[in-house]
Length: 225
Length: 314
Image (tube, rainbow over all chains, first blue to last red; front, side, top):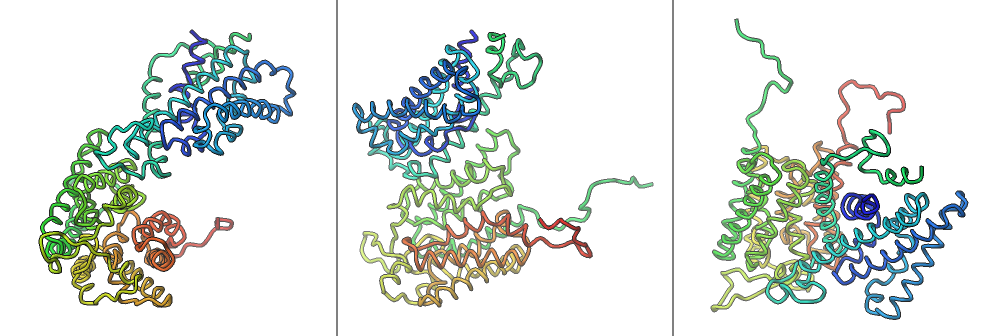
């Protein structure tokens, strides 16, 4: 149950893009179409899971003072692998994502999870945390990409939906449309998370701390103890 | 013995209410609307009605969903709808006009907290969204009905485009508005009449329109354009009189208003002189709207007799 929570928290409650507001740059840049969004989301998810696992394994080896360069090196290794893979098998995605594919190295979500979670937790929760965050990131990007592509071009994944019948609103595929969809989704996610937060939460680990249901250290603390 | 009522100030209120001010603006906009029907035919009335209706319905639904009080009766949505309609070409498909109004009300006004909380002019954002979404439909200019011959509507270019192509435009055409352009922006006489009404009713101060138009005339003159034709064409009159003077998005002090209007005029002129788009009124007003809070802070009145405390400067 607690392991499932590590996974599920990334989807809405601690959604990296909409609740933690990390990785905004690739989010706004690549969500012009559903296909690009999905490609970016999956690539980041693979990197996220890989780096979380390796960093978690090495968390007792890496000296505290040089942990950030060490994390970045590990993340960069995974990004390089993903990039080579995408270049070899999905060249069209590689062209569409352009510079944003190698830039996954500096995506704050990945470094953020390494610093906040993987460097303090065992392998399995870290992997699940990475997977959950990745799924949350991918879902958000896919949603944004689909909305922007549908309204901005009348298609989804390149298939005509309203294209040819209704003139598309081009502004949605431009930067203002990205910011607009982003803002609306953040508002919706906040509303949704507020509603979920009203459910009674069992205070097990950190006592009666009010930040408990927003904090992910709880279950893992118990396990470590 | 009479009861003593204790309440917070202000204790004496003027007669001006939001509703009264908005009604004045609507009255001031009527001449331009009448002119647009005469110049572009009955379809302009249809566009105006669509925009106003869409704005009012959007406001109604939005307030309902957000569980806020109903504010239809303050007429601000009607004004937004009217202003947006005046910024559209007569041939615009009606559903596009409706979308523009909805965007203006929902995104710019209600999402930021309703009347007085909008950070830029809602009607202008409606126009810019439509402009960037449906570029073809938004730059399809029909020749005024008095110049039409035959059954098919003939298209034309706006005076600004004509002038940049080297074609001379008659002053009388500009004055009476018998040129291609948006619904409410062409007839200078009607707009000026509306502006004078607003100044006489003390709804707007003349500072913003005069300085805005003056700056544009001066700068375009120095750039080698015909300042008279420049000020009378495009959306300048409509923008300077009705949109730049929006209370929520323009500075409160007179000095602030002058700085704001110079900024509007300068950006408009720069876009017209150097820009790749023929008209820059909407963008210039939006940019100065965003700067307004800073202008307000810089030009704040000092309380009478106050002494600046040490280190309070920043």
